[in-house]
Length: 233
Length: 242
Image (cartoon, rainbow over all chains, first blue to last red; front, side, top):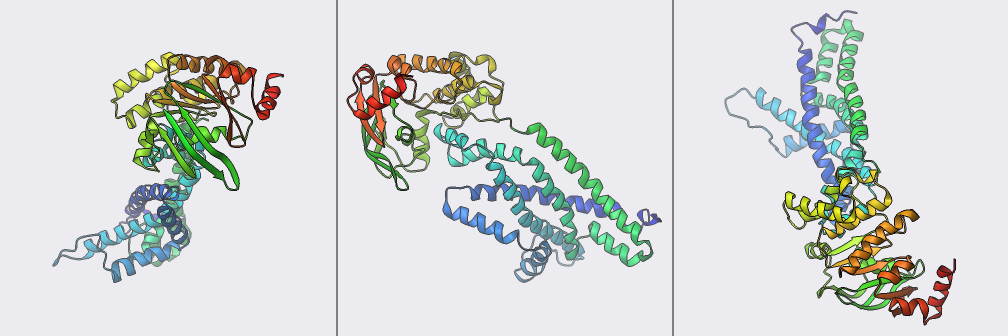
């Protein structure tokens, strides 16, 4: 197989995967925070918060990610005019567009992936014996303290392995960002399809192996991490 | 110290607390006895509102229990509670279990809280285990840590909800010894238990509950030697003869 396209200066193979990693990193960070907040809402004693958490998760996780990402670009940014980057007049708008699209994509991934983080964390909350929450309340901790100090630290440790799966899914999902003009690995693949049609198997293989190189260690790492920090009962 | 007035509670159709009127003065050790399902655990849990009540009032040290919120958390901090299943925080060390409340609720600084924590662990005989996790301790040790954790809040009242029921028999005494010494020091205690020896030895007063009511309220000697009600006689005959 001819892999000459990997070193061809017209294609930035590493740059495209670097974009994939950046998309994944910021999305994972945001999704983790929002997911934990959503999980907290879903177990909160306030019915309004519980209702919001439940409705959000059940609506957003059932929308195809492609739809969410395109809505981010066409509706949220296009029609409603959300600006996530500064557009300076008189300057080539490409820089603005790159930042804007990147951030819209990250926001879309966060909103979507947070629902899966939420459900994983919620199942982790169920592994913590309810007696511990009672004991925490009995020493005078407030609800947010009970959750933040006693419940969530144990819940998250219990679901590190499934969170690893969510992260792997997220990394692969970032390929959808190419739909709104973010030049990551899948966008590069499209370019290969157009320009290097004769090297089909090799281009696909290169992209696939690129992803496996990123995701495989994550799976192993999260598995080992889960074992290390798991709470003994 | 604890005042309950006309307290009613239902679990669905089940009337678990019926017209509870109870006054426990400071320093008194009150033992709650009764068959399972009689409402004694529920009674204990309503005192710091881990179990909400349907009607009536409960006051601790003159303050009527507020609804959910900051005031309730404040009040719970003054009421120590020890559970049947220990409920230690499984991800925190023994010392952290004890210092958590003083640091987060009482806003004590870490050094001071650890000094207090160590003195309490010393007192319950577990100081050498301070860096272990709860799962590494025996049941009896865990329960003594749970007592130290409750005492670290310097509570006005201690509630014990069947503290020895989940323990292996040889570990029961180490926990009861700690409770007995607490009682001698004048702590106000409400103890739900099946340990009749402890009830006689450390109790000032026995409440006998059946079907959600306080059926008898007497000093331990009188209750054990001369129970008035048929329910209490029946209960005692079952547990004292085996």
